[in-house]
Length: 317
Image (cartoon, rainbow, N blue to C red; front, side, top):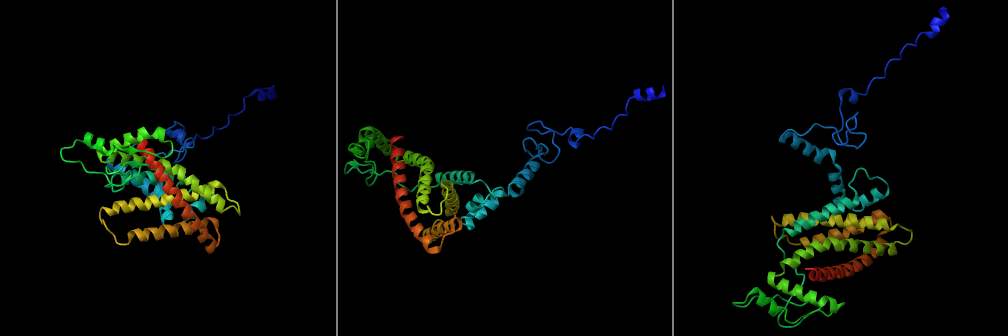
């Protein structure tokens, strides 16, 4: 009997496992609602922090974001300016967590540059008009001043009376070119300049892949992937946008710096040469020879891109 009773007796209950600290305190992620056991949510990755209650608290969070939490920004910009080719090589070798992604870096700096450029006084010409001879091919000299008592409409009629486009697809583009001529004459070209600035970033998405394709031909042996060349141009042009934006801002404080243009030309030429050496690892003479070929086609492609962008901006005005 006793043995039967002992067998029938219930087994002692095992002690319950301790609940996670987050479960005991009821801490959940504000973003996805999952239980947070550490400083960051294991489900969505959001950092666990208190809601913003004051301006001082918000300022502390913003300062931390800029100086600590996303120190990748400053590390990336420093490398971009002073270590040509370094970011491209790091990315290709798999060391990517410490730096901003190449495409994001390029997009942010290109947008920043064109925003800064859009706020500057505009001293560039997209199309030019002259009422002393017919407008042919979209490129002539001078924008005639209004005559005494002449209305903007009358001025546009006079300037564009002989407007003519004789380039490719003339039958389709002629009416659009005439319309662009009239609009530009009526607002002194401000609308066309604005449209041109908006279209240049789009044209860069064609320009950079063309350059990367040229690099594939020059670096056929040993073989490199197309994306390697494209990454190099993304980083190098991001540097150009960064330096140009800073110079435009500083130009408001110091309008004229003797020799600045030459210094920037030398810097960017050295930057491209050095980046090619770092990424591809070829000798000095061979790299300089390829840089000379690249510079020639760069100018050709850039001239074609600017001409096409000017025409496109005019006909879509």
